[in-house]
Length: 118
Image (cartoon, rainbow, N blue to C red; front, side, top):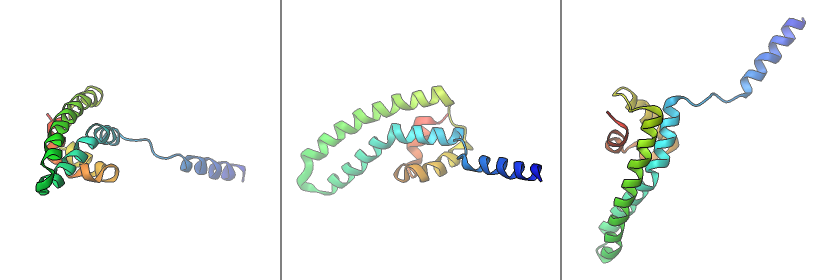
């Protein structure tokens, strides 16, 4: 009886802990932090491009995009240094992880491959 009680208590303690982040989860989170601002600027610039009265804002956004791209590239180099470059089969896994963390970034396949790929 004591063994049964001990087993039930032991199992219930184990269920309270959230699962540890995997390497893919950590890469997705870091990539999201690195490139999230760049994606937001790209979306804002696309909206400005459609507005012919906002050409000054459009040009300013292009300058900001270049600066943010450089920051994202440096940040991604840190991610590569910590986790290594993504292998071909890992891209789909990271995209899936990104869809829960940064949905706007999950569709940016080219950016992911450019920043973290081999």
